[in-house]
Amino acid sequence: MTWTDERVETLKKLWTEGLSASQIAAELGGITRNAVIGKVHRLGLSGRAKSPSSAAPRPRKARPHSHMLRVSRPSIRGNTALAQAYELEVELEPELVDNVIPLGQRRTLLELNEETCRWPIGDPGHPDFFFCGGQTITGLPYCAYHSRVAYQPAHMRRDRRPFRG
Image (cartoon, rainbow, N blue to C red; front, side):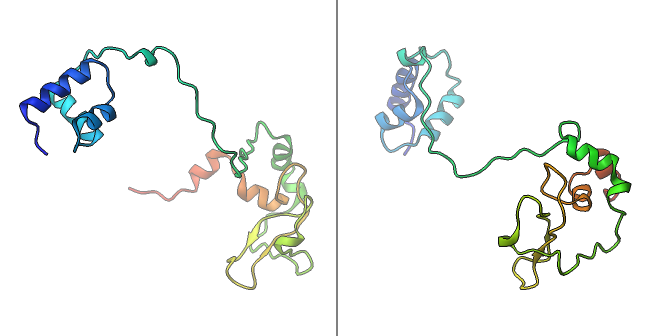
């Protein structure tokens, strides 16, 4: 499709009348909304007449209920349990190098509850995959060790980034 003088004049007329690019594309036929927008910009058209419906705000479409659960990340300032874990870091659990999880503490997905640490260990695709299962800190999904790993202050994360020079 080419832009003939007649089609350009029709475009200009419809544009100044306040029709949308989609409506103009349908009126001209054989052209997309994006082609109309591109031509309008190339022609430098502006100063559209406001359509009567644009004065009143449109009602929002109702969205279907989402099955996703949105959970915000706890911050150190907002979460007293996490702040206490950082303050009591030395008292709660010493820093472990390998963090060996005892066999009796390990849990499957079906064995997890509010009091068991939900930190995943290993590859979920392998048969030896499990969750930590340790005693959680009140209000957090992880034990003291895994809370320190998961919720690190920003300044500590920055210090451990490799230098890229």
